[in-house]
Length: 98
Image (cartoon, rainbow, N blue to C red; front, side):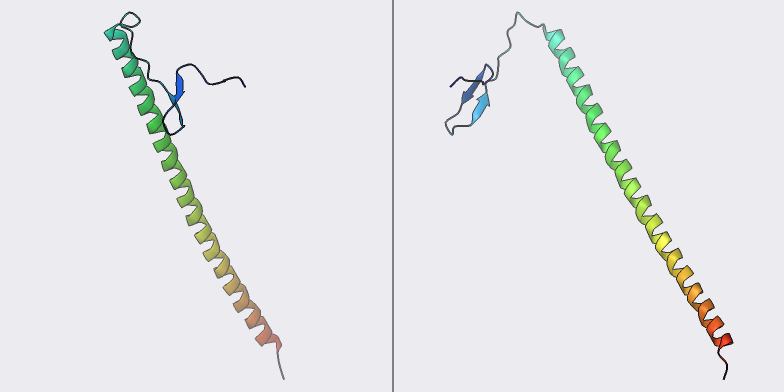
């Protein structure tokens, strides 16, 4: 059976697959390039975090607005129902004669 694991993976003592940490080769990147990469990663992380935060706030606002509209609609429906009942009762009393 062929091993389809990516290079640098191994099984630890518990049998879980792990990815080996690759140590930095000083000849590949300069410290300035690594610092720039770290800054870029930090910016991307901050952007994604803010995006999720904003999305969560918008979702909560939408849920709050929907709940408020549903309560207002239910209240209005109740008021209409009560006014219809009062009207019907008044019509019935006016039409009922001995």
